[in-house]
Length: 388
Image 1 (cartoon, rainbow, N blue to C red):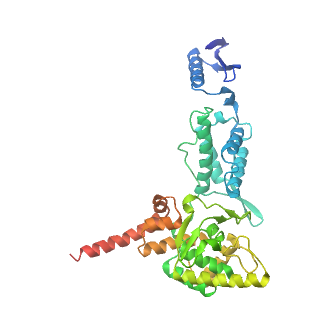
Image 2: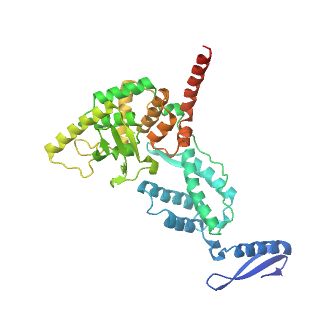
């Protein structure tokens, strides 16, 4: 039961309660201008107690709860790249809120102010100077998503009773325009011909680029491809893991379970992989090297090129061939989709080929390409009907 007393011109409530361990506690708060206000506040505390809330946790700080949440639900369960992100987010939270800010004192307006700050205050080194630039909206969304999940846990723990990240307005710069992410069919063909014509073990990036063109696989999947998962007799490659090209720890799981997939490959790619395998085996025999991972794209120095190195070679080739816009290795994946769509391949099969969890993801990511296909279909439909 709550009791009330007046101190000077303000009212104070006192709520006595016993925790789950049988220990008695007292929750006191004053400063209410009217007794009714103190009664309402006390009634809310008592309601939370009846719902099983632990008032001892009410004073936990944002950073204390973040650390505990990461330790319980995230640590050791994801890749090193993903787990490095947790430390980055923690630093941003500490820089803005400090280490003593109580979780329950953060309002929706406070969080919106933080999001606005985070979106517009990225420190970037340009030459010998530092500049403040905007972050991408995607980066802002990812941070908000992690904190939203944490706050949902705090609501379940009855430390909070609403999620202050709900309906936050995400600011930040847009990503690259859709037309900068893939190249047209003529340039796609030109790039493929160059890479297949110049493929050799000492320039293994040409093999990798050609593979990306013809499969739409992600770079980490290409790097993690091993010979036991290449079936040249049946013209299929099995994507079963990726390669940790950042920390060099070896194989890692694919992006998600549906990324484990079988990709049918063309006769052209079968021939190219036969050539690569013969070159690689001859080189390994001459040097006495045995690759414990049996990686497909290990070069004559027994190295696996990083994403950055392959992208630099890709850029050089595109500039040499006059290809515009210049795309990254991931842009090959988008170009693969654009090429298949232009040739009437069903979007459901494309989705499976890419390893998307469902076709809705493919539809969302490639909506801009599908609009072009839709216009072609409209034209074809009108043309067909006009013949009646």
